Image (tube, rainbow, N blue to C red):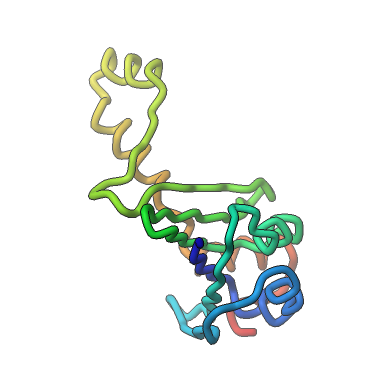
Length: 152
């Protein structure tokens, strides 16, 4: 069994409630909360396989989300956000270790070493492990779609 917690903007949940109940059954009451003045909702599911159809629908509808999974042996997190140009940004990493693994291409390390910029390279890649904050994501979505998700 895999426990999955999905966090989305409350406005996206209210606009597409069927998306969140149509494919998998929620195993707990939704949790409503604010983060930096942005209204969010956390939903919890239990799946028997990695075929989590709700996530596929979220991607199709271009709804940003955080996903935290636990299958009893391992924990991991995934964050899906949308950039100003409409492109998708996906981050994923294990959360049951003391640190997240980052795979930096060897060619990048070699160039950084040659230019005495290894610390800068590591800092750049570490920053890529942090998802776009929800407040910034709302600003991007508002700019793309012309509506206000933060106050919905």
